Length: 234
Image: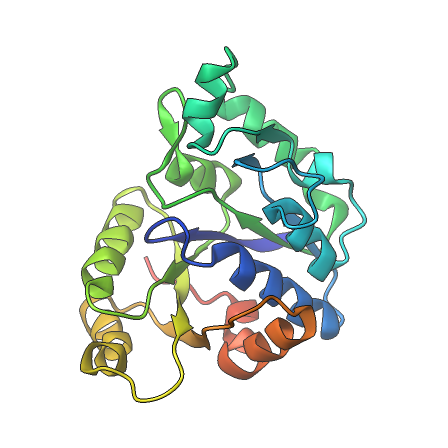
């Protein structure tokens, strides 16, 4: 049976794709047969080399086509649900999940990346949390490093638990070099203390996208062994 994780975040534009792609590349380097999925995407064509789907495919080495990795794509830079509505398109939760189930067994381990935060609407009556529940992979939550992230992260964890979702851990992304603020130094401990969910890593800020540098950063700063063990917290 294929194992995997569903990657979500406390917000949008926090580097979910970079972290997911970096994890995929690091797992591939370990010899893991890793697949990637970005079920819904807006704001870029999937064929664009800088699109989320293209970056995930590049670092994972997934041989599935971009239209398989990302079956539902919209050009307009708004949420996928709004982009679909503005095009007169309606995608049901069942359709979206079927598109993933059709390829689920093509890899031993899958990384599925949601769009935006856990409760970002993806279609009529459903959001990312519903997709994660149907796919039934535990969550990795990507969070910001600075002030306010404890609240956002704990709220995301609380909502996930209320939906019955298992959580593998939190990864803090975008830690700046140099002297770190008090919140940046204490946030990981507070998240663990108040949620019981482990912080699996703190990934440094990368000023530019260099694939091997990203992979190396993930290898150095994320507990991949624990991620692969998939110990979960309810």
